Image 1: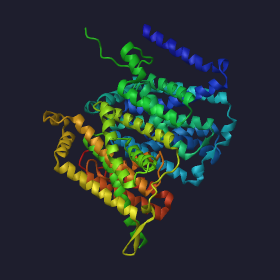
Image 2: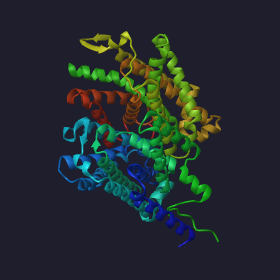
Image 3: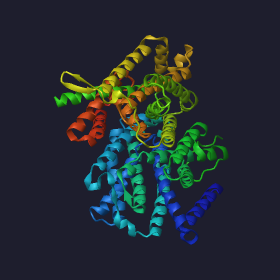
Image 4: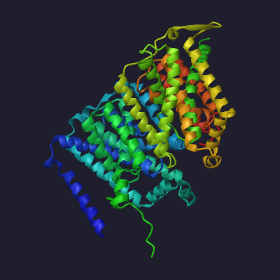
Length: 318
Length: 287
């Protein structure tokens, strides 16, 4: 193993150890913050898979936030499933739903895809608001979720985040990842070299839908309440795009950094307050204009730092 | 007869929807940018009218004449100093920048003007005109007339003036236009200014027609977007027709399924158009 590789393993091991040993050093405050971080980082990681790798900028990922949360809620409250079986069902429902929705919205390109997917999410928000089985616009309490041990929830959250990062890293190092990065860098060139662009994009879309739904189901276990105007809110896309852009688009470290900054800002300025959102919007604009590759991009370009070994370099000339 | 009334109202509301879409259509037509803050510029114009100019004792008509050039200046400046800097680096930067501007504008309005519903108080709001047994609100006739007039003015501007020729040349091929001494950045700023000015007109009509909130900007953006998609990218006449189609779909949905289904019906009709005629009614530009 190279020196850089050893350093990466050491850093990753320290981070994982710190997270796993949280009960020993942190109280319920640290636990709540870390669950919030894990949830947001997972959401950002999935948005980055779309925008940073598949070239799909979506302002409609709140669709899968809502679907994930409602699968949990309806599974528990209407079909009497346990909390964890319903939790496991959330990504399955989202992935199945993502196939026809991707097939429809992929007809739109660029900015039109971004807003088109927002409209699909709006349709679901309005329909869930009128669906009495799902509690109409007032929403539903998920009563069985109240008895879930918070430390168990914490370990699920941490496991989910680590698993998702590992999945993204493994995907990027394998064939589909190479295809994704080729699409990100030059879609037409990738297609001409035999990359099946539509199929690879759909793969990313389905994976991102499942991951987003899983993260959302996690939050819904914690809350435990769901309401269509909040679950299908455009604010999820505001948050996800902020985390990815500020942290570093098209990097694995970026969404993690972005999520940490997002959680700190939310603690300082209040969740979804007007001032919080003004700061998020302004920072996104400034970062996009001044340092479009975000913090992780700066670290990589200026200092050569990367935490995850997913960067491909052309072989050195002799 | 009731159905005729619904369709007539759809036609009239469609004039305002078409106008809302025109701004987005101009931005996309010249820069290939989906300006996600366009709806918030419309609502900003409405707030400027109702919470600043009218309380200062300015008569509504004069106040409206102030809103439009003010919005032109704001649109021009945003393009010149913010949005313009994000162009030429792919799809994502202008989307993130205009989405960020949208978030900032909405929440500045929320802080500055609270979440209370606003509207322009005027005798126009409750007046009606009877046409062959059908009564239509006067304000909706005004919406349609002004929307149609704006479409006509824009078509003249783009088709018959030197500025219009330069704008179209930049849209078709900005590199060659540059060789003809047309600076694309100036053209983009002019287009963004004109688009925001149409947003100012739409904002005044919005204030006179209905109540609005700081978050109405997102609704306006979706209306504008749907109208442009249905009408066909790059065609102003198509955009205007798209507005009429969307408004009719919403009002028919409200009539047959209940008022809470108006928006869903509109969205589903748009998605249906995407499915069966993705190029829209009168396409000019490949998407």
